[in-house]
Length: 250
Length: 362
Image (cartoon, rainbow over the protein chains, first blue to last red):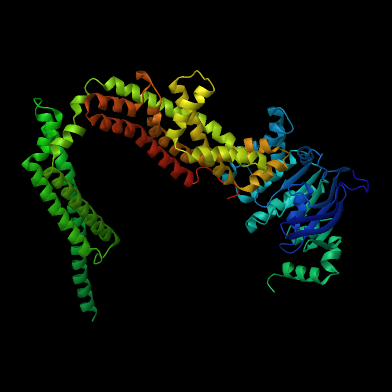
């Protein structure tokens, strides 16, 4: 727990890609049990922000605190920290040469050093959690996009993380497959998981999110409870963005 | 009106049927012309070789080539080929169906080949086939060297297999170093790779054998030295193959592994390299085929009789007899090994392309 009672805290985080200033001073705290939804136009830095939290991207400036530790400190064992932060990607990124079960047990045995039977048991438990225990021996190529993404979620959950990061996890899915993935995430939120969700699914944001952050050009332009952001946005940019994504046909 | 149009269609259909038949005939003529030229000549020569045992094999081959039957077959085959070529050339645009058009084109191309092969064989026959056959097809001189060729083939495969295995191990390590984000790690790996890719293998063998071995006071046999140098050389090429293979794996795979808390080397070893290896099997097998042929370069090392490879067995036979048929035999030996390997690479590449090896997220 950080000093302000949050699980994760970003302090003045900046990220440059060459001359491209993608994040311009992000300060943000997420308390245990919160479901923080990050919305914003494409190119606003949502994914980069998320990847700065488990340091898949290293912030150029600023600090990230996780459970009272400054994980941007070079002395931090990042591999250990990452076992407590699950991440799910837009492109699933399952290992194609391993079955659904092996995808989950790999890190359990190699990183957490669990015994194979123990890892297998936990993997089956997580597959059951996402409703895919019957697909344990299937390879990713034999699963639908929605099923692959659910396996990816199970793979992250099997590590028993304290925080889950979701990076546009439904953007690569066919429309009819989005629901099953959102359903898993909704259940996870109900179980009290702390989540940071980058998404374009406004319905999900409104319904499941406890707080919404609107990111624009690398800064947090607005944040608040979902009903505030969606019904009474204070900024013109937020209003424009919401009108575009909520009524794309008009 | 209606009646005329139906009649017109019938007339057209009859004409079309004629063209389709012509296309088919062109294909048959083209195939027959090639069969006459190549198969006919081969048949006559084989018949002559088998007919008598009184003269040397090469003399019987020449007799077969020189036979009047051969001349007749060659001229007839070339003429039939020329007919198919002209007919196909004239007719392929007029063919009414895709099948007949293809038949006409294939027939014309086969006919062209019959003309070319027939012309070459006639020219060869009119030249000095005795001398050629005496030097290159004099299979009688090989009598008694079969055992030596077998040893040579065994040594060639042993050198190439051990060299390739060592090269794969060296190459995999080098590729990981060459992919490091630290310059101080990358630089020596790059230097090694560029040096071994940039100098001739025969130079590397001689410098190692006459320089490094003596300088380091190593007590190794020429055979061991050859395996070592082949492994080091193949390692440089395999490193580039592995590097390309590893770089072809989507970035998300490494991120997923790191995101689960794996170290860089765990992520590489369990997630990236198993996928990369599948993709680099065909190019590595190509390297193997190249190395099989390059084993001939051990001629610069002083090797004992039992250590010689296929090429140097042939070379020794040539020195003893001044007859190049030994090299023809060596070539047949190489082809016996490399052709199945090349075929295997092609099959494997097709299977990899057709997606039997899955790709993430696709």
